[in-house]
Amino acid sequence: MQTITFIGNGNMGLSIAQGLKGKYNIEVVGRDMKNLESFEKALDVKVDKYLFDSFDISERTVLLCIKSQNVEEVGKKLTGKARVLFSILAGIPIESLKKNIKSKATVRAMPNLAASLGQSMTTLTGDHRFKKEAQELLGAVGRTLWLESEKEIDIATALAGSGPAYLALIAEALVDGAVKQGLRREDAMTSMQGLFSGFSTLIQNTHPALLKDKVMSPGGTTAAGYEALENGQVRAACMQAVEAAYKKAKRLGA
Image (cartoon, rainbow, N blue to C red):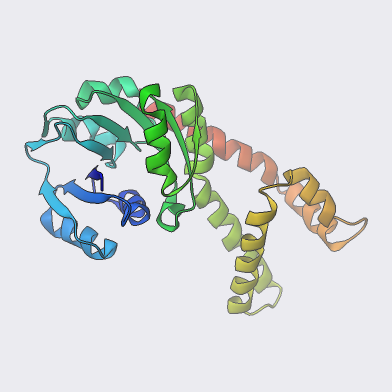
């Protein structure tokens, strides 16, 4: 099996590794051996573990999973030139990646937390020579979409990358609303989970507006609730959330 070298051992790196285990050999590089051992334990598979200092990435297939603000610091600790660098760092442009980490090719990827379940929506851009390999690698943890510019991947970061947090907020709020009206919390949670599970299938083949129209009968309960959402400017807030996250991604790369 091909070996993937994880630079960084945080939550997203672990989520991707969970999706890749059994399909690739995994080695991980980090600051602290205890944290690397915790990574291995959580992954529940044997991995090779290394510390950052003077780690040689020559000819390796590298998956960069550190915090965006640490790219310069970590780059100074790595030696050699990677075969290819796949970076999941939000907002860090390819030019900056090449400046700090030597590699024969660079691809940016933006997965989301569902990678651990093999259900990520991962957007990609970068060196076209590695388009197929990038799609195969990140395709092991869900769906992929190749984009033609870094601007587009920064926008997609604000949507698919950050999206699980937005949906989690909506899910929590819906549960709280049901509890407020008198439903037991555990029953509200079960109802919400069933709602999201079914909706995830429906939305694959039906436009959101058409789904809404199918549910909203004249003068019915859904129409009343939908009016409350519009009065609360939920639609505008969602659009503003994507805009704010996109602007933050641009600032990270500045």
